[in-house]
Length: 227
Image (cartoon, rainbow, N blue to C red; front, side):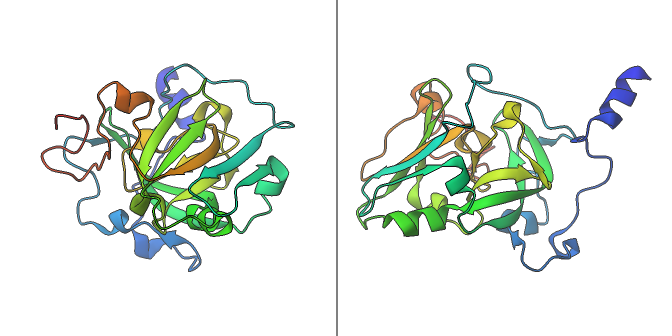
């Protein structure tokens, strides 16, 4: 019973069935379109009620006092914000599911943070930009995101999850959230974004993961380059 008790005491452990989008009572919350599917768990995935911790190198030490977020590449106005400045930007909340390529899905999440569209608007992303390269404090870790997914309404730079700050092991203080792609595209410990004309493989992509990573792709999703 001690194992079960520990799970129930875990504040991120889900003890109820996931809500349906029409059960989200706050009209200002953006609803990720994949939550409206009749079957919300993609092929090859199974639901977890926990929030597993996965990363490439372990949790890096991020000094909040010196945290910076930079926007560069194909933009008219490169940007740099401190954490306090970044958290003053217009914010939204998004209701979305979260699918890890290691075959678990955590349904029913509410993320809060700055819309990716807002960052792109402020920086003035140029029309020739076709990809966003997310840059992380995780020892130079990167991941690539097609611009159309980066600019989706439900994509954001999140600092809260289910009403609480995102803890370090889950990518806090700020992480990228791209709900319509596998979760490795939702870079933890984000420190910036670079807009590119040509696609550029990131850490996991260099190792063979798919360049796009759509969990609803052919077969059981776009997990690997050869899938």
